[in-house]
Length: 419
Image (tube, rainbow, N blue to C red; front, side, top):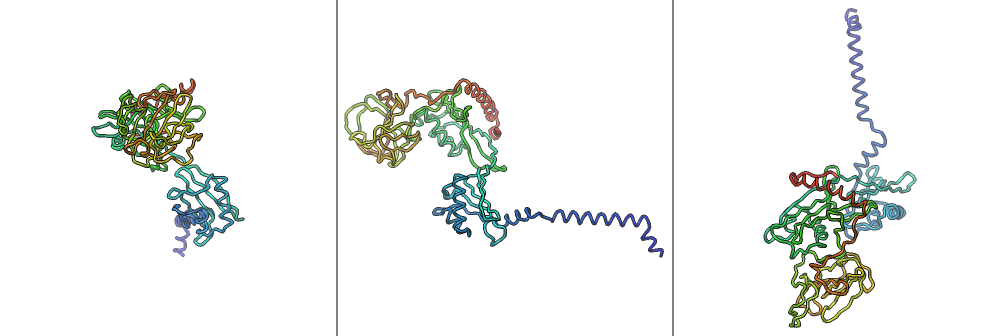
């Protein structure tokens, strides 16, 4: 009786109640942690039953879907949804990815994720009635502006100097296209010239995914410092402008083929290498291997596409009421480029060759202004457009802020500007 009395005493009873409460709390916590809702269980199962396919050469959407067990009706439904609601009509080899998710191993596909870019994915889900639904998800970007600066050394090309400065190849190509409106990379690049580029880097979840656009570029050219800034106008369109808000992109490029070496300059008196006598050389010759694509120096309409003994295969483009360009000695013309064709700037119009009076493969390039041949390397080229009053005011404010940021990055180039 004494033992029973001790057990049921007030102190012992209190200890027993506290112990039971702790035990029940632990059990409840265990159930909360381990208990999963049906949707949670489904998500876990889907994670475990996922297959990822990268599109390869020869793959079609139909083939990939049939390989995953979808029937022809489902294939047609999915193809129609992708085309109508996601603007995806074809798949690109080595670029697009597809994810197939199932409820359990061996179950039919219940969800398809198409990933056409790092910043967009399309989700197709199959409901209980077997109908497919589609939605597009934009991936949020973490965009940062980074600064890279360099200097031309003896024997450098701009490309080599840019690589040494840590500028990615794709960004360098964009900078080439921008500076080609103002510079001749053969004559204007000298040791001691300094340059910088500000461009975007895009991150997702802390990892760099790709590079974005060039935001600013500066180059100490022979004709003076060339500066360009990217700016978005009130109407949503974007372009490149100089420090004062004037259009930096000219209507024509001085050098259609990037990084090509000049072999013969514009001259009123030159001994012709084939004919042997002196006559005017009305354009500039750029050395390039046979088959190198020739891009249009500016947007315009093809007014001549023909052959003659001097020029060989040539194309002539009218750009506006004042300017025309001519491209000679082509090995062949680009498909679809005929008299009357409207071409955009940078569109391939033909390929380098050595037809006509030529001693080797090269591009002969002419600019004609108001019917008179002019030197492509020195002629003043018109800008496409300048900013209006309100846009220019906003541009000046934006440019000052960006310049302030650039000055800070010059001292600490490993930092970045959060955009």
